[in-house]
Structure formats: structure tokens, C-alpha cells
Length: 268
Image (cartoon, rainbow, N blue to C red; front, side):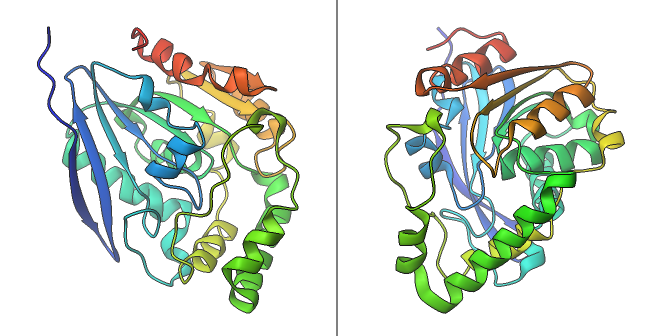
């Protein structure tokens, strides 16, 4: 039986923020797991997007992006651009997994952060399990406008009115039954996180096409912020990728198994 080191919690300093980090060393492959915009390690677990919950026998690094969850942040839009978040990620990998390849896992903003980091330093990554790729390229401008509108609405009307407006949005059918959650980010930082996202886009198609790592892309239907079209285009661009599209919560519940398959591990 392998020796299991307890989960370690710590903070990691990056320019303008202190990142809250958890690290589970059960030996084996290096894995880094990210989360989406307005979410956190804690919230992703509630949303059934914590694929690492099914892992054993890895060295799993998880952290809250700047401004999110238990990490600190500033009221500066560029701090939340995906390229800035990719710099944070690469700094963490240098500290925790120096001179080593890592498997990257993450939804939405986390997916985008991984792709930005990988196009800058492709040799750092052994493979990817990418969830819910966000709007990109031709579909990005409309989403950016939506994020800017949310930022202004928040600052004008406050969080309670914002959350009430959010409840009016239709939910993807694959998320039926998921508990209601609220953004895990301080109200004074949330508008700036949206503005940073509005400034962001995925790397150019030709850069993504150069990523040859084994990749599984997981998405669900009827989610305008995470359209199936982006997932299909990433699968077309990335030469060693496969796509799985969920339409029901039961199919989303299989996502941790897909990660285990990607890592060639047994489910716990």
C-alpha cells in the first residue's frame, strides 16, 4: 500500500495576489486542476465539476484563481485576463512540479488558462482534460459585451439584484439537480473579474493546432457561455483530441471517470 500524504493547504504569492493552494501527494502523475470564472475549488465541488474527487494515486495541485475563493485580488481588470492567469499557473507549476510535465484539468476560464499556458510552454504539459470551453474567436465579442454589462449592473444595483437576475436565465439540461450556488468571489472584485474576462480570448487557432498532447474535451449542450461550437472547433484543431458531449446530469457524472481514463487510473 502506498503511503498517502495528507492534503496540504498553503498560499502562493504572485504579483498582486496571494493564491490559496491545496496539494495532495499520493505519488504518481502530476495533475493540476483549475476552476471557472466566479467559481473556486469549493464551488466547483458543489457544481459537480471537481473531477479530482475521483482521483487516487496522483500528485494533485488545486488552487483558487486570483480574486476567487480564498485567494486575494485587486480591482484591476487586466489582473483577470486569461494570459495573466496563465502566468500565475506557470509560476505554480515551476514551484510544485519543476522540470516535469503535468496533466491539466479545468472548465471554462480554467480551460482557457490551460490553453494559454500550453501555447506559451507546450513542453510543460503531458495532456489535458478540458471542460466547457468558453466562447472564443467569432463568438467572443458578444460574450465580452455581456460580461461588461454584468460588471456595470453589479456596480449599479448590487449583488442581490444581480443574483435575482441570474435566476431568470435558463440552465443547461445537463445541470438539472445541481444545487444553487452564488459566485465565490468578493462583490467588490466580481465586476473586475468580468472585465478581465471581457478582455480575453482563446489563443489563435494556429497556436492551438500545434498542441499535440492527448486531450479529452468535455462539454454540454444549450449553454451560450460554453457553446458546443467551441468544443467542436478545439477538437478539429487539436490533432490528438476526442470530444464528449453531455446532454444529461448522468453523463456529466461520468466526467471524473474520463479524467481517470486520461490518466490511465482506476476510479476510487
